[in-house]
Image (cartoon, rainbow, N blue to C red; front, top):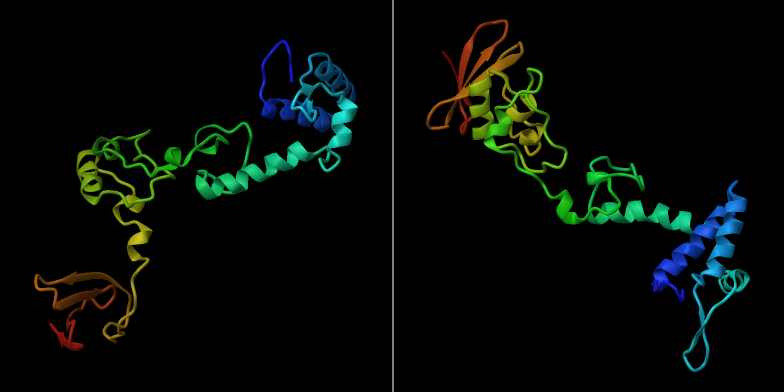
Length: 220
């Protein structure tokens, strides 16, 4: 350990791994200078004798004592950080890892940083260049429909993905198929009891009514 500056074992190992990594690329002279400075300032991990006393070691001694550590050991550690961190705190762009990232892409992010956000009511009424704001990527819950429609009333526009999100239809199932119209149907309505269904065809302009429980059909 350094006599002039108290550093931890983790810092000493990091210095050593950086110097080893430099030997794998074109910066060989930088690796040699760094190795000599590590010895000069005694920043390399020391050795302990049988009494527990610590003694400085040369760069060659540290390399010989850690033959299991490859020169690109630091690079392999960095490659493992991203996938492991995604399991605990997923990034906003899955599969993209950068040591220089910030915010939701930072390697220092925590699970709290990636919690789902809920927009305020004023956010749905805001316009960016005449368009409604994009839905945040970390907004896991569905938009509040009351806030969405209030924003639509105030601005006159709203994103279709907010008014009718795709996740609304994810749990729909086909219960029965009834032959009614021969052309496409774009309009459907329920009565107040929820027992009757009314449909309007696109080309035929015919309104038909159905009893939802008994599969009976009546043409109006």
